[in-house]
Length: 251
Image (cartoon, rainbow, N blue to C red; front, top):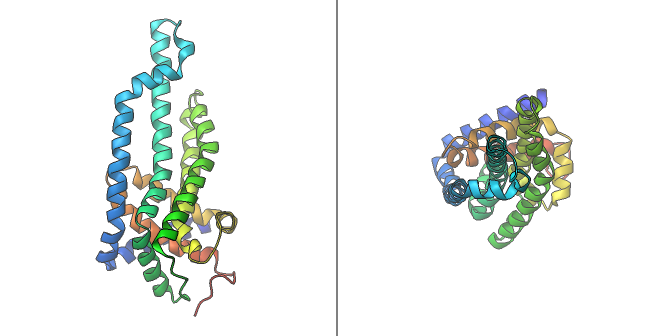
């Protein structure tokens, strides 16, 4: 619980850093604006075609009575849209960080300078973009292993309305946190496996950052501001998780 509270506090410190540096906030918000526009367009298209997709997903209900057929397809539509929201949220951070790689490099450098850390190697923009896309895709695919079963479990009466939403929120928060610390770790030559291993030792810390950030990103347009704030908090979490390791040495 202490680590979780610390993670929430780091999210708050990220907000303070951004408020003290409006230029950094603007830099971090620009990629989020573009990503928000792209994903919003995708969700609107999904909403338009949701009836057809729900019908394709429930061929077993073709011979059911109208009442049960409608209920099954409404449930399928809700499940599909819910899964798209979760995947979109995790993919949002990956795509935003990839598009805004040079901007987030600047934010990471500013935050680390404020912490008095030894400067990390500066990545060429094309390498940062490649690492961001590859790591983000790997995390999205890995997240599907957890989110798809949870979405299916969401149709189970009682369980789907109580336990499943909590587990889904925690899974989303964990993968979101992995995205937020990625740039700080890539700058220190850490692979995705090393990142997961390091952060897993402080899972409460990661969830304390990822949970409020992911929940706030579900508020329309809030993600534009939340993303750079959460990223700054992610640099702080990365530093804390590596505090006792030789990869991150304080001056």
